[in-house]
Length: 254
Image 1 (cartoon, helix red, strand yellow):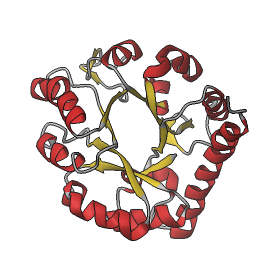
Image 2: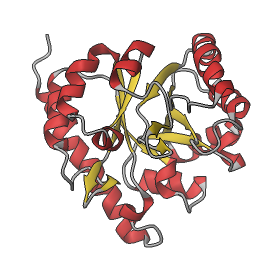
Image 3: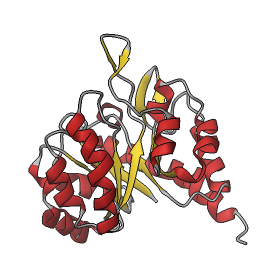
């Protein structure tokens, strides 16, 4: 299933985002838990699910506030058994977050039937040469367990998206879908330099059963113009359906 990430429309409230997702034909949502209290309110999130018929299937934690929101994140996601939680690797000096990620998150996932994934975060440096996050390589992520592969973040590390699928193998359980356009990451998947069409077809033929999340920089979605915004959301959804769902359904079932 293709999910729509709430962070894609950073200047809208959650209810408008669910409304847009419904109108654009999305059946699933990934909620970015951040400083907006509504993203931390499990009962409100369940009301939005029911009101719009769009299922919350994944959560992620705001990279800017991950050190402050650990407890709020725990209390929210535990109310949604079966969901995927996509976590950034720890920053090099974030000792408390690292301990929480290594020790608490696995226990939380086991107790509440969640699927804990670590995702490759966009590359940022300290002092120009020291990576801001440790354990951010494909090797480190694979060794940690289940992986969410972020295509735009992968492009920043100059790694081949097709080879990444082969390398991660069964560890790959979730995808952040986007493209790179004019050197700008998190563009719509149907336009850019990455071979997203081939990537989706390859995953379909490999029998990939995980979810995808459309993860787009808001500027590529024309926030503020509802007609254009919805048209772009629909176009990205249809692109995914053409190159993944249609291909997946065409594969003879054993």
